[in-house]
Length: 107
Image 1 (tube, helix red, strand yellow):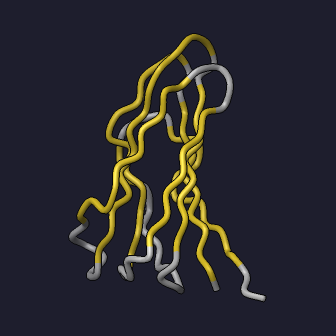
Image 2: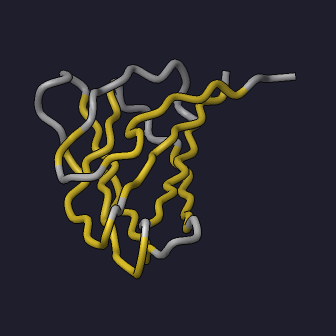
């Protein structure tokens, strides 16, 4: 039985910007984006970015969420074997809006 390890790429991010980059240990990866607001509605856009040199990142995919006071979520799968991966919040709005991006990596 193969195990899935998880890594938090963004943890309760409230503003735009890239998180730290990580080196996954396999090429099969899943990404789960969750988020919410403290009141009202909002939205968030997060890019999954990849690189082979750890310096120059390019967009692999874009994930979007419509946010509310209940948790919203979206998922994505990738088998692209890039050496580094990170999350980058490119837009976020709403009162108390935050997003968390988690990567699952098949061992």
